[in-house]
Image (cartoon, rainbow, N blue to C red; front, side):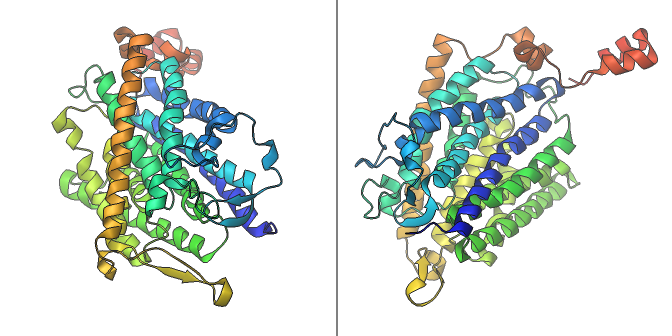
Amino acid sequence: MEINAGDTAWVLFSAALVLLMTPGLAFFYGGMTRAKSVLNMMMMSMISIGIVSVLWVIFGYSLAFGNGTSKFIGTIDFSGLGSAVNQITENGAAYPIPLLSFVMFQLMFAVITPALISGAVADRMKFSAWAVFVAVWVTVVYFPVAHWVFDFGGSDSTGAGWLASRGIEDFAGGTAVHINAGAAGLALALVLGKRIGWPKSPMKPHNLPLVILGAGLLWFGWFGFNAGSALGASGQAALAFTNTMVATAAALIGWLIVDRIREGHPTSLGAASGAVAGLVAITPACAFVAPWAAVVIGLLAGIICAFAVSLKFRFGLDDSLDVVGVHLVAGIFGCLAIGFFGTSFTTGSGDSAFTWGAKGLFYGGGWDLLGVQALGAFSVLAYSFVVTLVIALILKKLMGLRIDPDAEVAGIDLDQHLESAYDFTSTVGGVLGPRTARVLQSQEPS
């Protein structure tokens, strides 16, 4: 099979788009924290890029997509990917793109998944503990789960992951990325405990323009996340692109409707959060549902997640930036929605015709697809939650997870990074004098 330049270019460009999502997430999360925590929040995303990228090329890719015989884990291969330069991609079928383009595309999924978890532990986790957690978590949780869901084996399906071989439909990572990260965030937040003063003290986002910027970058990069998962410039990619757009727009509207009814005003934080909820919900379904169904899925996801995030106050769970309420809830909803709205599509004609997707309940497909989707969603949830809980408890015992209470009150940025996002004294002191500078510094937002 010859390399197709157009398909290769699309996959490489999509990989770059997905990488952009992690800095976008850093802006999104950074703006949602308090001013004294924004740098640490952004650094948690950035260190994920460094750690996961190195581990991926050493052994991560082989654990996720190695050509073994196990349905639960790939192979351990420390020889590197040098021999992959001249190979094409095989994952259940042959694709006319270089293997390394597929390797790099999948790397970006591995990078952003632990970064998503960080939103659940904002303001209070040691940076060193976070770095160790990321390295351990991707090794024992993400890489195996990616094998379960994304590895369709060789051309004869040998070595396919157990969920992939059962026929789960998760086009771009509703289970492996969002449910996985949401369940891990829940476990880690439980072990760390509540922030000092939560929920009595207001802990509002310090910079909403950063939040909207981050949401915009996520939306932009998500086209690579979803449409790029077609691994080619095809009708399937176009459908995923279309559904990603309309579902996200509908979810934004849905969240704002809840804002208007519940708060009396549509909020910018609601618009950004609704967009992300829609992106999460449509991720597993983007190539398996019609555009009208994508609108319904997005609208419902925005409404459901708007209510879900408020439940943390009822249950006393300090999920700082709503990882559970958005990523776990929308991920489960989007995965199960395929069981209702899923349908079949055909592109091309004659010998080049390609059909994909199974029919859900609304198309007369019966309960089988919904059952497989539920199995995938809740098995990943359970595995991620239990293993993350064990990892967190071990790290808590060995090195401690949480910064000192005094440092938490003063600000995690200064304690962990010896930096502050906003230096009010250098400019104000020179213009207004040291006395005024000290007064304004004492009024610096917390």
